[in-house]
Image (tube, rainbow, N blue to C red):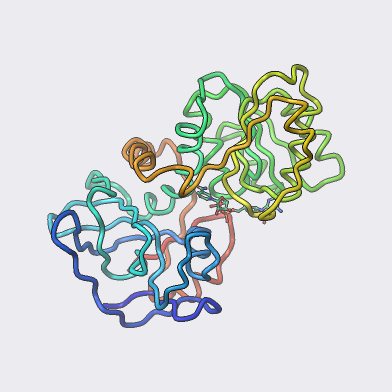
Length: 316
Ligand SMILES: NC(=O)c1ccc[n+]([C@@H]2O[C@H](COP(=O)([O-])OP(=O)(O)OC[C@H]3O[C@@H](n4cnc5c(N)ncnc54)[C@H](OP(=O)(O)O)[C@@H]3O)[C@@H](O)[C@H]2O)c1
């Protein structure tokens, strides 16, 4: 069969022949892959930089996707850590890590949205006791996951939803998705504006980390009227830096709790508990992301497309 194959962590996957996988007895199933999302997590899998990387090559990248098995049913699946990923004509799934989709579901829309949406859905459901009416800051709201975080915070009944990001065009679109205010990052008075606008939030969904997160944290905490009011800062992504210099006083002078949300801090069972309801919301069009379908044969060109305005989805 044909697949996208990584033979070196220094170069993009190539479209080439690869042995078709064989399912084991039990819960495994061979599926024809219909769509697989090219998420940042997949890029870090393919260049060996993800914290779960085992350095094993060759590998077929792709952590999730939509496929059809011999029973004829359409399924969204999440793969375990494996070198036989989703970017192939066929892959092996564990049916316990899959959800059956209605026949009319759009495989590209589902494959594009599940991963970026899961980041905030799971964070708000599993990493904090989020209640309707609480206020949320989405830090780094202009990426695909951030834009979906705005929609999901609204779906979960958030009060104020403050969206902060540096791409002004994408930022301007976020009120239509549910943001009650927007704050541009990377301009002269960003920290002041963020401090004033987001001073009283209950939860921060942080896709940036690095220097922007440290600056935003101090700005929010020092502007807080009641510093004993709990604030849960959920670290989800690190597009602005893998480390952030958090002053010790930030943790002493306010009731700040910093937690992470991702593979490891969220268990497989906790992810699977959320997959059905999230897939329903995506199929219903309640939460959306712009998707761009690209033939699997063009995987090398797809790799070069790092534009965050849409999520690339490979279709075998
Ligand atoms: N933990 C989880 O469960 C989970 C799940 C999904 C994703 N993630 C992580 O979340 C992050 C975002 O994912 P995504 O799918 O939204 O990626 P994406 O669609 O590629 O978006 C990334 C966004 O980050 C912005 N950005 C990059 N550097 C920035 C900086 N220094 N300051 C402000 N904005 C900056 C980019 O904006 P510009 O246009 O301005 O460059 C772009 O809008 C990634 O780190 C990803 O790995 C985590």
